[in-house]
Length: 171
Image (cartoon, rainbow, N blue to C red):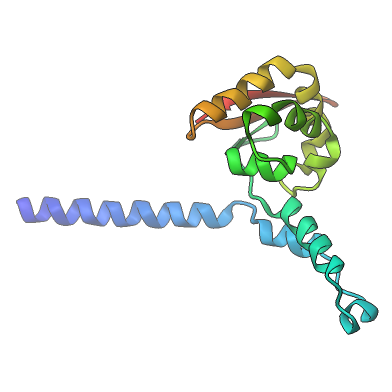
């Protein structure tokens, strides 16, 4: 009886892990966004590489290749989580005590959110949330400084032709 229980538990665990792996594969992947947003080099760029061209392409790639985790999505809302590193990539500034105002100013710009395939459809309401909920967004960034496990939760709700976003601390 005990051997059967152990086999059953192992089988259930294996099936659960396979289901999780399949679910991860169905989430939007950032390499597709990178392929769409990366242009092929021209003949002139290929013939004479310069130190400036690779740096510019690396910056563009960094700005668009961070992955935003979608924890819930349906026709009316989407909830996304970003960790400290993802916020730093989006803002172009490390998350540190002295950089909070600079990060908030940057994240209040819709073009930052348009550069990522996951956040692009919601760029305007997210940017408006950072400017309209500045105190809350500061609190989220401070929480991320004090707790390495804290995440930035972006909540976007669609009501008719209107979309609203909020910034919160998430786990």
